[in-house]
Image (cartoon, rainbow, N blue to C red; front, side, top):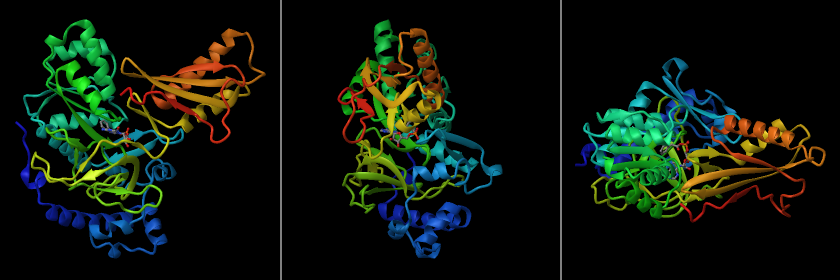
Length: 436
Ligand code: DLL
């Protein structure tokens, strides 16, 4: 049975707005005092905290960007001294430097509460056994789902991602009822389970999947393969991690926890706020975060919102599945990858062995992303010396793995074999579309 806190989750919309206004005003004042980047941006627009009276003035506040996290790396955007920061997480930036976010104890409690709301809303409780197969570590997925599971009193299995045979054995032996991982990994697990013929030994009922885009078609396939109901969960490191929003039992969009985050949809070119229902870029403001607060953060996710009544009774706005991005960020096996990171590795490794021409080729085979990087050798390096070529391929593979955290297949190809483009170089060939 779904469990919810009606006072918060079913709060009348007018009351949500009042609460948001109060929290936004306080957050603006606090950030103006403590976060230099924010203060400079407000000053540049001639704005003082006293100009922001409530959510009606949100559109006046300057946007913030992923590049701010790079410019103020690692801690420059924190609003609390490090002595009050109890955890950091990190995610890919557009360059070798990761973006870093920090949480106070209170932030971690709110995070766990946001994920717990989603879990409780799906009928999970202290009898649930939750296998968390998102990666643990700097990625927010593992510890984010973990915190929610513990908050609802479930039994959490912190197995992390990978090692598929062990995952399946654990699922069976420990009687997992809930699986948390990326949808592509869920699909892969489903296939392996079928191959091993052990589906009837599973106790799984629910899956909570996110961190990458997935289609309705894929949802049906996963539900069928694992014999579960599959639910979408959304989040990003800069705002919280998983749990910014999540689906309820009706699977009709993800409720954004508006007592903590204010969503907006804007025109990505003009920055103009679009009316509810329109498709554009999703922007978030965190109104309760202490350690790393951020206002009007441009997520680059393309999305739309709806405030239509949900059959579950919750009043918080829902977001549809993000349909793409306005930047060139790729999500490969759940990991965020920018082509510029690959370029950086190639430049570092290259000496004069490589040309600047490379191509990233993505595909989906057996529901798993394949990731190939073709790099052109220079005329001077090109030879029959297969050993040297293989050695360089290995070096690039290792450097890429250390930069991105996932493996790519690197192929050194003959000089001038990558097709030149007359306009912008086509760096990415993504054959995954329609295969999700
Ligand atoms: O992916 C946090 C997360 C972990 C969400 C586990 C859900 C489950 P980042 O690594 O910072 O954080 O990547 C954030 O991933 O801007 C979206 O482009 C994409 N993304 C996250 N969830 C979804 C989803 C985590 N449910 C970026 N559907 C975001 C589509 C998603 N895209």
